[in-house]
Length: 564
Image (tube, rainbow, N blue to C red; front, top):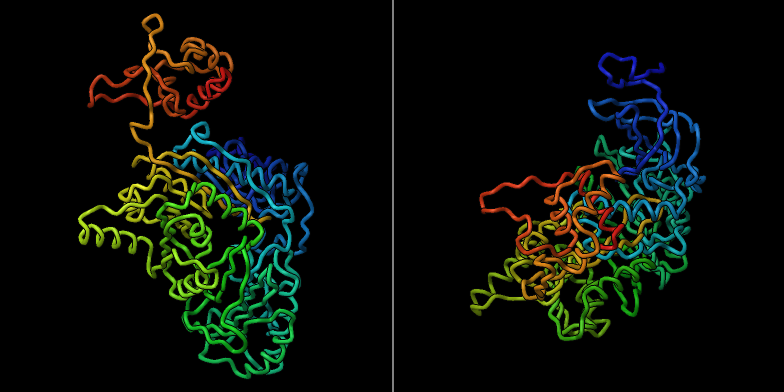
């Protein structure tokens, strides 16, 4: 290993195997610490904000690289000892070595930064509600999927994949899941060894048992075990049932047939070996049936808070028509149905829709209707069909979307715009794709009113976000003309003149800003300026846009003068 200093290099480029000392300034979306060495960015796993770390460069690109933590020169005040002994090797918990309070700060900042950087949505333009954290950020998961394989000695192992690999890290206890999981895994391994049932070999596409899925109803205590197999049936399955059905709460034992050479865990064919084909759990006052293929939020305690916020943002009075897109087993739909006139749910997985319809039945909800299909296809088809049959454009009062990580299809977003809902409630598990979709909706006449981050996944980099958007219409704004010495000033503008703002920015930030730049930032922050102030003289005119650095400085000035 060699110690290198970029100032000594002719090309000022850091190289692989260099060892440098950096201060971690931020955390990436993948949970890696971010630091800089002479302007060169390094991503370093197992570090937290505030760490001063000695790092070995393991991959070097032109403008950034990846490093391996060698030692901590000075640990961050936010650093804590990981509870899990394999936290660094396992890919499940990326930030377990951050205190929980700092995790919440990081997640809220991540959402705000993504909205601003990717969506162009300044924080001053919406209400940011404080992130909702967990009272107990351990053992909160009601679902776990354990890959099954063999180690170099041919012994069966079960656990989690190491970060960015498919190497299985064996686990005896996961501090995010229910403690019963480890007991069930031990029984499955014992069954496989006693009955000579082989583990799946991903490279050769041979062997039988691929994954073990375990679900537990936190309110009901009901347990589901589903064995994913690379075969049509599981040899000696009755002996597995004999071992598992004795567990307190055991309700459903099944197999999922997946013979594809794929990274997708579950197969489409589910065969019940014992008990029911589902378990039940409760959120709020709604009871849900959950099958092996159903999407159901993994953190039931936080899910109730998440859905309560979505319901609050929907602002229902009992008279509304609501669409719930990507509805899963009807988790949000049934919350909404109790407070609206009619709810339509859309989900691509047929079995989930069967569960949704049954969930509506067992809860006595008759005003919810569900469709099987892709949301980006079902809603546009419904829209076109209604237009042809009635000659009138179908509308919705509220549309709720809770898409997968990739976000919404643009065709779907455009159909939402066409249906002109008064409010859109967007529930997202990825604030980057959320920001992209919000940008599209804002460009089409909607504005972001409220943003709420909810921590569903403690000790990971993932965070749920709920956003309320409402229609932006010309008649929503009442324009009042005020004459003050022939100047067109609003009450906000009267707090500080353009000259005072310029002087403040120059003094505090050393930047010169023009009246044009100030008026542009004011408009972005929702501050009215003179109707024609600093607008282009013609439609073909091109105005210079305020640089990001100056925009931030002006925003600080507006905050200083109490204008935002």
